[in-house]
Length: 320
Image (cartoon, rainbow, N blue to C red; front, top):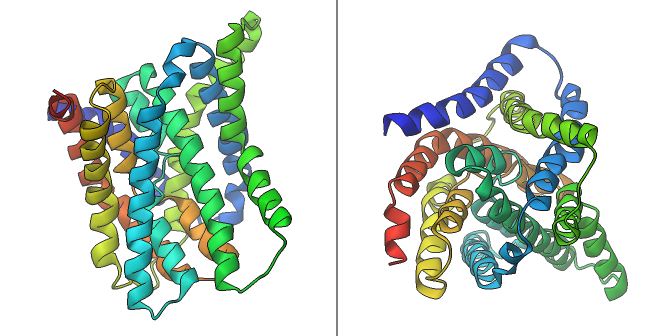
């Protein structure tokens, strides 16, 4: 357990440093704009491309694994959406945000650094694939359900174009597609370009985690929602448990490292994008912010336990 603590504490320490800096420096949240741009549009895409372009093409054909992990996330979203809708009298917008809070983990900022630190560069492939397909699903659900809530009758073509635009212009997804193409053609970049990719990839994790901490510090808790009583356990415990059970049942031949990675990604706290979506549609905003901050704090314990179980071989044992 001690070696796991030594592994995760520096990473969570970066979040803590960002949180403390955000509290003490007195700088506005807008000051993070360029750092977030660097992380989302440059550093993390460089990391994904570098890992994927060096991966044997056969590893991308694990369709059963991808389908199972995405199905587990969809089940979590749907169940939470239904529970929230029953509790709030059928408010689709609020139920949608709660569904995202329970199913949309921080797989962009926290996923790559934690998975790569815990399981090595081989974890980069399942991280990138899960990220792409899960985000495609979330980017599809959000506008569809919010259109239903607002009773908008937009043309199907316009809504489809909006969804496709969000999916196929996301820098992580574009980097993943480029990485797969690079692996297919066995691209070899010039040495200076490889060095630049290595430098950018190395900057991705510390910048992303520090930015997370600052963001949490500058979004003070104004309201702790009662829904936290079920959203936190569902996101941090039920979601990864469901991913593990479904993979062990439906895809027992999945590589153990991929299973460990999928369970870890499912165990991550609610993504900052949950709050972004809440802001965009003006629904459940303060409470969404609280869920993101408090689930991140609770994840210090739950994610550490998850990595301990994974590295101890407990998840792989279920695969037989």
